[in-house]
Image (tube, rainbow, N blue to C red; front, side, top):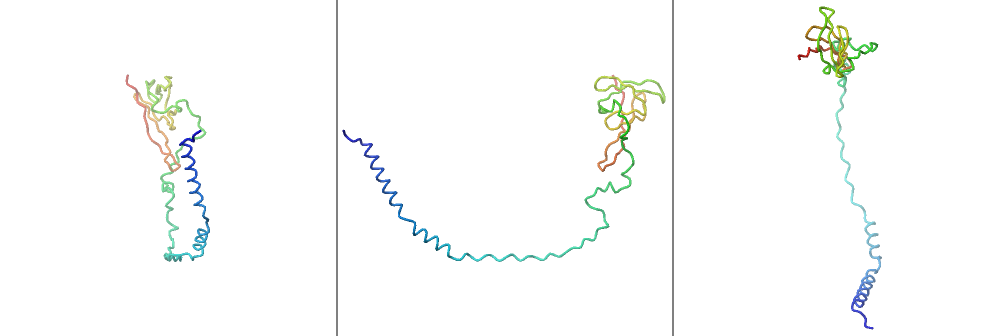
Length: 174
């Protein structure tokens, strides 16, 4: 039986690898000596601490002035008008719809007893008169005429108070 060339190549490669690996296992005594030498050297000097600048002090003497973080509208007497929604008032049916979703389609009567016909988004007709409420902003009906309904709505002013604003719902032309 003749040995195969591939086997001889493998055998030669393994012998070479063994020789290379034995040459690397010389020892680490010189490396240990170098590390000990480096550790025994004194370290570089530290940089000196930076000199702290002395800041001049400031005495705050504005305790009597307005607080810059408070809302100036809360301090004004004009912002508190005393208006606001009545928490004890029972809500009416038309207050559950936005004012732009309500449509005036007609009126009945004359003078102070005039009644307006209003259609809600669900296509139900309601009768309203002065003193009733409609819309989602506490809209109180001030007057009813043949062509429109005048309201006074309440809006929060952002400072914890309320502002009144006039609104109207006009008769829809068909």
